Amino acid sequence: MFAKGKLQGKVAFVTGAARGIGAATAQLFYEEGANLVLIDTEIAGLTLLVDHMDRDRVLIGARNIGNESDMQSIVADGIQKFGRADVLANIAAVRAPIGPVTGMDADTWDHVLRVNITGAAICAKYVIPAMARSGGGSVINVSSVHAEVGRKGWSAYDATRGAVLALSRDMAHDHAFENIRVNVISPGPVITGFHIEKLAQEEGLTLHEAESQLREKPRNNLMNRAADPSEIARAILFLASEDSSFMTGSVMNVDGGY
Picture: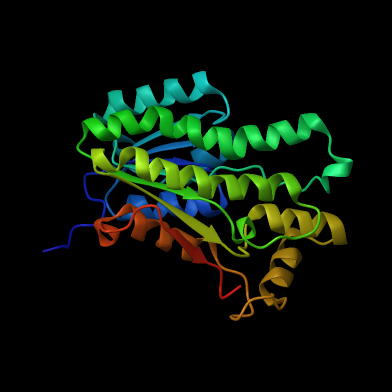
């Protein structure tokens, strides 16, 4: 007799699902028995991800999480297809550095904030009521270790990561009475397509060469390496499942001892 997955029969909404941490999380949730609503602006990545999945268990939406009407419609479609909501993994983010505030372009700043913090709030706005009707659930907002540790040249992105911590703590207060838990994952360095492409462009490398260099390059953490996206996904699964049933308003650093 096969053991049931940790999310068997649950319905999980995952943003930023086309690649990186989002894709790894979607794959793991699927393996653990969840029905999925997968959201990203990159339809090609979503289509490739679900190619081997049972389409009766998956709904994909090429939507912008910073656009309220986009999110309202895809959440409604997900509820219509699956009838409930149990998990929201808010992973989507714009990661482009824009330098110090003295060199800030206001439109770029607004775009980063719109996706990274407003987008997370918009997703929660439409998923949480369905989650409450289903008897409760778990929201996992992905931040970054740089919400607490500053660095040069990432003012807009890191500001949004700090805002995610504050938003999540208040959401935990607001929705505990509905049996909804809200927690945060703060990753350290992760081998994602964004970082691979950035290094390849900066140093004139192939994508394979850039990925190899990132995996081999010493990192400023105790484990002296970057994480594979699957390692972050397993932490997200922990917060999504009943394994973390007595946790809310918490921040889990998954950063190799950064």
